[in-house]
Image 1: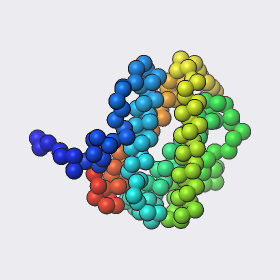
Image 2 (image 1 turned 90 degrees about the vertical axis):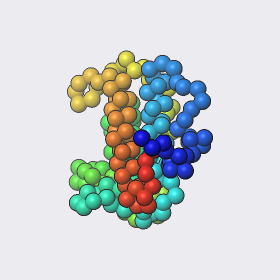
Image 3 (image 1 turned 180 degrees about the vertical axis):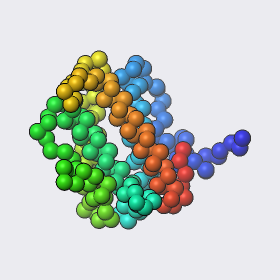
Length: 182
């Protein structure tokens, strides 16, 4: 097997913001560290691209793009944290409606206003999520669709969502400028 050189990697390992000096201890801290690592990966995959590149769709008929992923992940954070964990079901869904259920991706067009709003939404939801998660008890439950769901399951679902979409982001970025995942 050929050893990878630092120059072949996405980020020089000495400057990779996903690498921590002191690993997290305990289930909750580890889960949140992994979640933040995936969030940072999404951010890194979008770094240095212009509006058109971020809005570039993958393979027709897919509407997936890096900009769509940022909007989608903002919607996911918003739904699971504000609506499900905090129980604020009166809060309207972010981006999607009954009439336009996939607007997080469909509305991800090459427009600077759309781009700015997407980043603001995602960072706002990340800030809210980080504050909320430090207060949560993983063993507690919330009601979702009439059934009890553990907070742990919600956190694991978010982790799974980010892991899957980080893989999509790898492929989308490579198609845009050839940069490969790390």
